[in-house]
Length: 112
Figure 1 (spheres, rainbow, N blue to C red):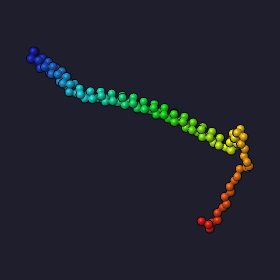
Figure 2: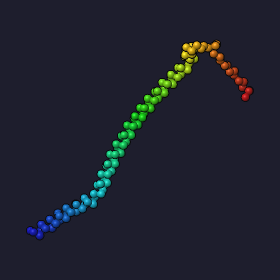
Figure 3: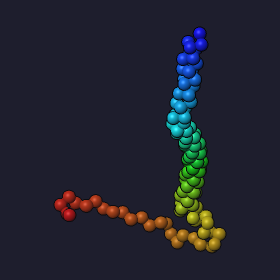
């Protein structure tokens, strides 16, 4: 019975060493897979941070657009002749007469 168990035990012992060798041979591959996992996680964090920054910049841009439109409408209001007249009245200035208008006549078809 002893000779029959010996080959079985040896095959089990060799099998254990083969598995150990397989693990050691593939350890570089497993480390590479782990490194790729770390790079994937870092890339995800980087992308999320960029998305947050983009959102903040878009919000700031929206606020600046509203500020530009407000300033533009205020300027358009202050450039009206009636508003200018009210502003210069406090300085003692007044219009000398009605505003002048320029009428441009129609050109004839033959004149170039």
